[in-house]
Length: 119
Image (cartoon, rainbow, N blue to C red; front, side, top):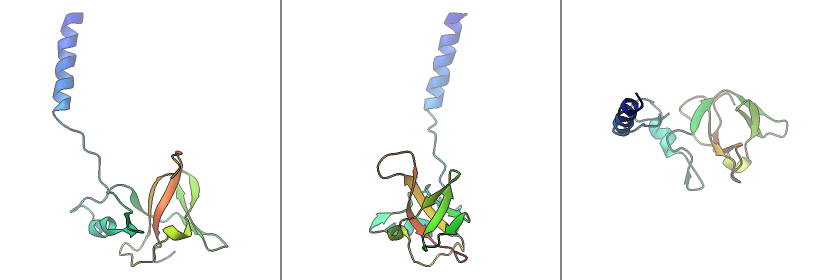
């Protein structure tokens, strides 16, 4: 029995290797009407969106000091003022582009934020 299982297991692994897994892309051309806009987002010359890290959101608050907070992973994340982009937003909703913290911790870091029409 043991000698029968290994060749089958090897065949499954080889077959799986023939079909690469593609990461889903949030703003793939043709599927999101605002894909080109998302891909054009820049902050200080750096891209904001690499096809999967910018998202529309309505989970936005403004502090009494006037700073934006965005809810990510069940926590409110502070948006640094230099990461707020004051540009036309065709989505109508606030948009946040996040990654993990600049220092390498597993904490969301918002590198670009575009206020929505209601924010």
